[in-house]
Image 1 (cartoon, one colour):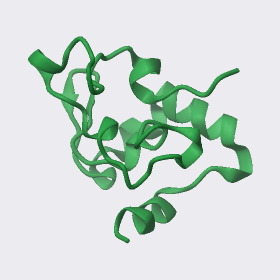
Image 2 (cartoon, one colour):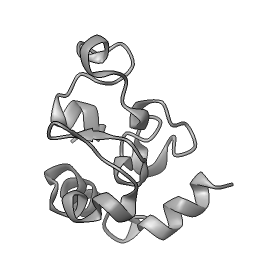
Image 3 (cartoon, one colour):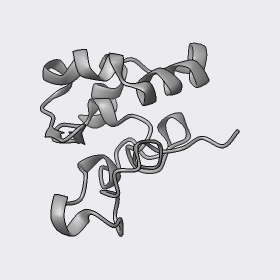
Image 4 (cartoon, rainbow, N blue to C red):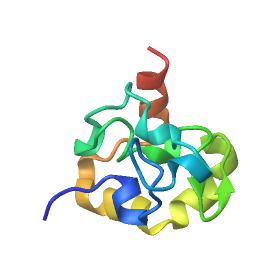
Length: 100
């Protein structure tokens, strides 16, 4: 099965060139390049939980610390965690990548 990015899984249309960018804006997970390739995703598409300002379930989300509870319950987060198994990068590891 092909790995999908969060915007494909959620169908939000907020990725670059997506159908909802005019009314909802471009999601920062689709433009944040520091996590490009992490878990096989494009930009931060498979590590969206670490990106501040993502828009999930109709609400702008804050930092990972603020949105962690929502993220760990998210079907996409659970899918990536399951697919990656022992290779799953936790928030601390991803933060290090973001701040280098």
